Structure formats: structure tokens, C-alpha cells
Image 1 (tube, rainbow, N blue to C red):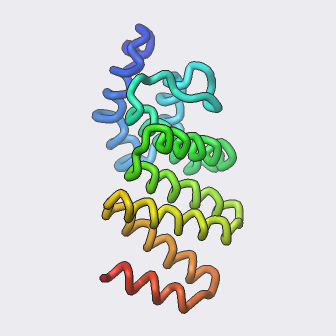
Image 2 (tube, rainbow, N blue to C red; image 1 turned 30 degrees about the vertical axis):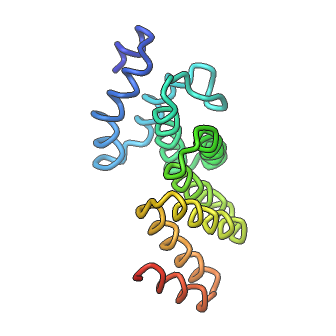
Length: 168
């Protein structure tokens, strides 16, 4: 991986990260600091700028990877900024499935900041986008998070509605 980064082959490095490193670091080890360290070179102009990768899919996926890792280590402001970037990438490239996931992630950042109503609106948008894109995974995730948020807000009526939709 470091050899690919050092030689300027960022696309190949991103592919190697996606296929070989991410499943182990995120899913099995929870090695979030290592993820941040490995992904940062894919953003040679800094994390506030888009990655230098050529593929829109790869750009979005690596932004999501680093934003989730930043969130897990408590760097919520940076994570939220990266999550907004992933929304921009998904809109620009008209990727409805990815946009649904990016909106969910952004809603979670809003919820972390106690902006519960804004998080709910964002999750409802994620639900609409996910349904339009016919993406069952992000539709289910949107409903799950909306139901959880309804419980947090003490909104039994909406919880029951989301639960019914979830099991429909």
C-alpha cells in the first residue's frame, strides 16, 4: 500500500485499501486511527479537499471510509465535513444509492451534535432518495434510524409508523 502511495498510484492504492485493508481494519479490528493514517495520503491537498482519485465511486467510498473512522475516534467536526463532501460527490455523479447512505451518515453527524430535528429531516430525505433509487439496504437503514430517532424523541406514533414500514 505504501509503495503504491509513494509511487503516485493513488487509484491502485485505493483499490488495494478497499479490497484488502478496509474489511479487516473497520469490520474486524476497529482500527480507526490506522484507517485515518492510511487514507489521509489519498487526500494530498488535505481532508477539506476532494481526494485525487479518478473514479467517482472510489472518491465517494474513500470519503465515506475516512469520515466513519474520524467519527469513531471523536473527530466529529471533520467527519461531518467529510460526510457533506460525500453528499456533493454523490449528487454530482447522480449516484442515488450512495447518496442515500451519505445522507444517513450526515444525519448521524447531526444527531451527534444534538440537532435531532435536522437529523430527522435528513433521514426522511435519505429514505425518499433510497426508495427512488430502489436501494433496499439504505431504505431499511433509513427506516431503522428514523424509528430509533422517534424513540429518542418520545414520538411513539412515528416509531410505530416506521416500524410498520420496516416490516412491510
